[in-house]
Length: 159
Ligand code: FES
Image 1 (cartoon, rainbow, N blue to C red):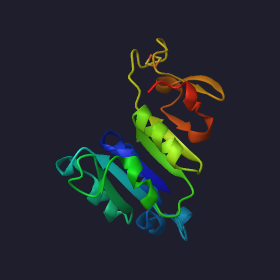
Image 2: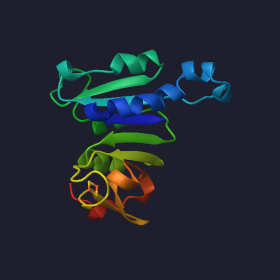
Image 3: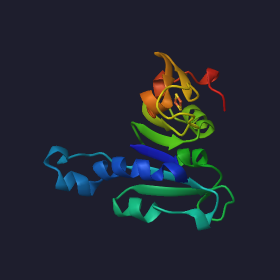
Image 4: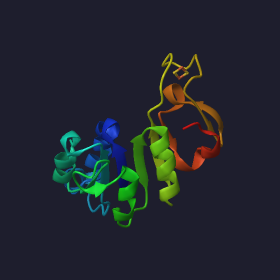
C-alpha cells in the first residue's frame, strides 16, 4: 500500500494506514496474518510544516517526507518520493489535482485518488467540481471525492 499525500490530505489517509498496520492486523481477527505494508510519502513546504509523520511511523508505516524547500527529507514534491516507495500493489492518494495528475504519471498500479476540488455548492447542483471519467462526468462533492485511478480521464482535466 502506497499513500502519498500533501498536508491537507494527511488526516484522510491516516485511517487507511491504521487499518493496514501490523498493529491493526494483530488487533483484528479479520486481518490476522495480513502481509500488507504501508508506505507513506508526505509532502510539505518545509520542515516546520511537517505533522503526522510520527503518527504514521507509530503504526509501522515506512515514512519518507519530501519538502519543497529541501529543509528535511527528499528535496522536492511528494511525487519525487515515489521512487522510494518500495514494492507496492495499490496507491491511495489525496491532494490537489495537479499533484494527483503528476502522481498518476509516476505510478503503475491501481489506486484510489481523493480529490481536493474547489466547491461551489457542495451538494451537486453547480457542477463546478466536475471530473471527466471513463464512466461519464462525475461531481467530486456528490460522486466522490474518491475515484479509482484508472477511471479518470486526465487529458481533459484542468490543472
Ligand atoms: S460543488 Fe457544486 S456540484 Fe460539486
